[in-house]
Length: 191
Image (cartoon, rainbow, N blue to C red; front, side, top):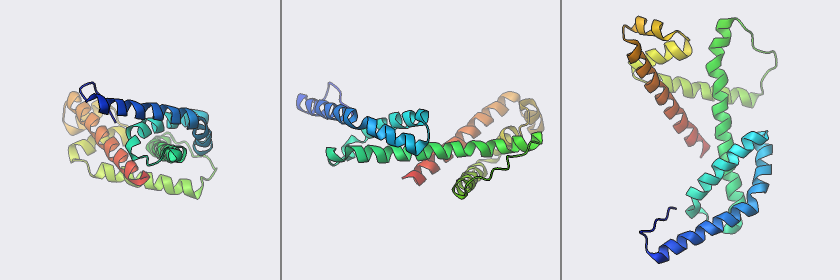
């Protein structure tokens, strides 16, 4: 909900009242939600980041809150979703680094991940595979060579018979496409 001075005085005052209520609700419940997020996210740094993002989302969607008594549960639900999305994004990182480990000849630790973790990794791998497959060929080829095969920029440009500048431009667009698709998929699955 946004207010500007061009809005009539009555509507502006109503908006200011909502802002004050939001602030008092946040002050009343943020510590409890923060403690809950420490347990959900597993550490204080992630819990702080999650709480901040959840507060932004709650403020932007304050009109969806039906009763201020339910604010703590509503904020905790938003924060849990943000934490879940953060974990999904972090689960993608090992997938992207796996080929680098294999190329270096390093072995993965013998510690087996949980079944839940294995399922999440498989889901993220599928999302990444789908995102890459959906790209137009010029972008997909550059992305696969640079980010998956870890080839140098000049080598990729030479293999594709394009300039280094064109290769960099395609890689930038390809990465943006992958990020966009992954973010959209994570948002859909988080709701």
